[in-house]
Length: 406
Ligand SMILES: Cc1ncc(COP(=O)(O)O)c(C=O)c1O
Image (cartoon, rainbow, N blue to C red):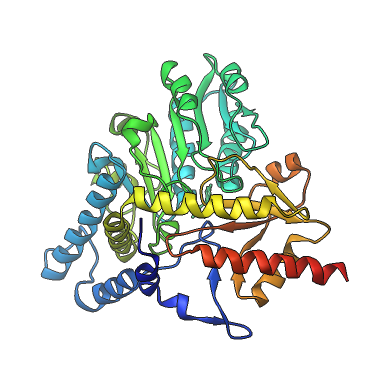
């Protein structure tokens, strides 16, 4: 059990009144989580007291900054149970992390005729980087089917794997369905020694992540969805694989020796962190990790799955609501449409009621086509949400239906 009333006090934005002085109900954590006071004040304090560039100077501030930056890396390592801090690369976002792997992995491993396996429900951030690879290296992308709840079809997935499959890149938790990828899918890849990239954008804030147990070779997520700041992304990669891959971007900090003719590169993780990194953002992510760790990822998961069940049960009773994915293993995300009302109208109507939801294609246009819709509304939960807020939401969608029926 988590103490939601206490947690809510940690988030200053939850005191904000929306439009007609309505209490804010924030059901858009899947897009970006709100920030606890601790993260805001510690980052503010860091700028005031400790800030300097990292890994470059020998003066006190530089040493302090570097220490805090590297300490954040260790916090991430422990948070996802990577075996070494060298396996944690700071990027600006999960999107950048996927692009980094797509480009460097392809340069080393992908040739004409090779195959990459994705699913039909991937976020554009886990599609387009691979499209760029396909166009550059003339390889093929195969898409695993999913069922109506967003579970990957195991038989179909297995049928796609063969000697030409160089990498599998799939979501760990769907940003549309809220369903988690079954560990059997990863096992199919592990048994065939096919490297797997897991897009952990939606799982890192809701599940207790252990990259070693999961059996993934790469795991990516963004700090802003885990109650940390924007501008910081994580790439976890197995050390032995990252060591073999070429550099991604060139610049300061990633070199061992430079002449006017050539350069040699330094080891992990600096090899992938060219230029001044997101210093305070990495520090802020470390603070956010401390914050959620203190609450406990299992407690967070229990709270959010309970909220999901409550909302799902209530919504399934309403005949004007179509829900995309109704399986009981959904976590924190419910996508839906109200009969004959566009999702943008639903979101605008709810906004007037103080309820913030997301509406649109959720960066999953191929999935929207598969679901035969242009867009959906999406509610998503975080640690600060309550069952009472779900009641307000249910009343608001009833009111919305009545309004548009007139
Ligand atoms: C499943 C999934 N993958 C990737 C991303 C991209 O994350 P970012 O925009 O933080 O790079 C998102 C963000 O919404 C997401 O939900």
